[in-house]
Figure 1 (cartoon, one colour):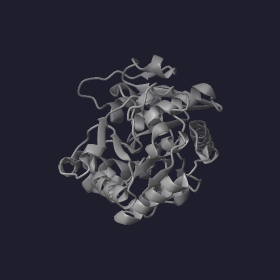
Figure 2 (cartoon, rainbow, N blue to C red; figure 1 turned 90 degrees about the vertical axis):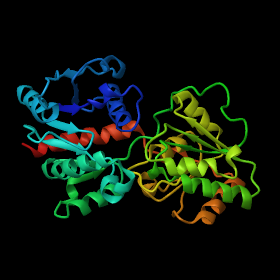
Figure 3 (cartoon, rainbow, N blue to C red; figure 1 turned 30 degrees about the vertical axis):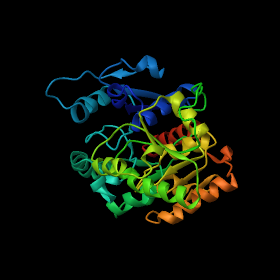
Figure 4 (cartoon, rainbow, N blue to C red; figure 1 turned 135 degrees about the horizontal axis):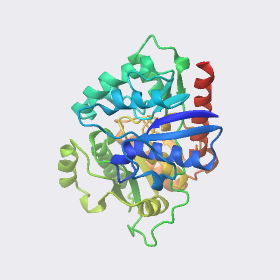
Length: 357
């Protein structure tokens, strides 16, 4: 049995499971389903969320003025037996007494810092290179992130980096909302309204597609309102087809499933993705996808997904028209699952333990 400690503080701070919180929550859910000879212990400063996740949490209480990650967490690890520590959110303690694994979800802060908050860029620019040096192994969700990390730390051995896709089946057991949210044919995008998602370009593509193809479709944008998105809102307010664009904000899982299942196409023109969960959750619900060649979409070669370069509005529009006319089908058998994701993590934990002997 491999004893693994995981920093799960993010679950204490988020009521809505998005991003990295989804990643941690689904690793814990699959661990509960099948341990794979791993004893996984999430650690946090409170236990309020442990019942929801179904895995008991190890509580390390906060002490005013004492850093939790750099002081309290290593102190706790020294007093308890673990074979491996997993930092699932870009960082590990600076003085971990056990071999550490770190997950780096993307390198936007390095590749395209203009799309990241300045305080986040400063934090990750300091934290990630140190974590890359100290970790026994590094997990990334796509080959693009692996390539980016090798560019950040050129002396790193590529064998220390393991690519593990995220799961596509988070919503497989969710009952869809009983009624359609939009009662006209539509294209869908799910994600925070932020510059990295490239939504101004999506509006251009949408306008070109409905003009070239004389399509009756609308465009649905679902997701929280993010940051530095003033340019998008100005473009939206002046958009010729504004009456055909539906900005829904954050939606529930049941509504999300209904949107995926009713959409004609899912469109993802992101400048950069570490993985891009929306693309794969759409495919898992049977919705074909057109995406920019970034993150997990660049690695995926199954049916139902077309990668189209950015900056070519008419090319995107013609792909949309072709997808609609050809009625593209999705084959879910090729999609990664969260069970596979956790099983690969468990295998890596065991390798790190064995390598430390």
